[in-house]
Amino acid sequence: MGHRMRPAWRATAVAAVALAVALVAGCDRAGPAPGPDGPTGAGGGTGATPTEPRTVPPGFLECSDNPNPKELQLADVDLATATWSTPSGFEVVTTYHEDNPVETIESTWYAEPTSPPLPTLNVLNVVLYSGLDWGDVADDCGRVPLSAIETRLASYREQIDAEPLTDASMTTVAGLPALEQDIGLASYDYHGYWLFSETQLLHVYCQWTSGNRDVVEAGCGPLVDSVQVG
Image (cartoon, rainbow, N blue to C red; front, side, top):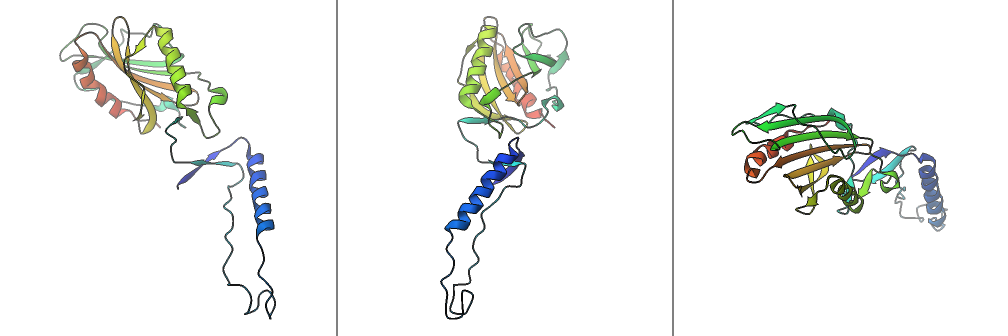
């Protein structure tokens, strides 16, 4: 099983636990029975080297790389470094704005289809939010229960008066764990991606009006695939 090292706030506690494990191991390990030439003589033990307990360097917390299907690993990177490419058949526009932001907006980006051109509200969107606070929900390894993620997404939907059209599912954006879901509003629907860090959210979504989903989604996959972070 692979592991990675992640800085922890409670370094003293980790060191104390490691010390306690070492002391218990020392008390439980029986020494070799004395032989005719003493404990280390030819008639003594088998000569096997005792296995030392694995220790974690002070100031680090051991976090398993094996994902828990009921948790989301928050991105440990500045999402403001994200870049992406405008898909073929789309052009960047500045005529949109987020009229009901769910967090603090840091940046926005929009692109409309040009081949063929479509009415307003058929658009690709990338929005960077900041100011997120997971509180005690996130553990020391930066993992959040999916139930807490779903609760947050539900609060976003309530804020914009939307409804889920599909269940949220795990995916990746820029190689990082994320969620995706279809959302319905009164004037349009969209396919959204949510990439969370401890304090940021990169929200990529592709929205369409009735009858125009195929044109918009033709650019959605290439847009998401082009996202890079860090």
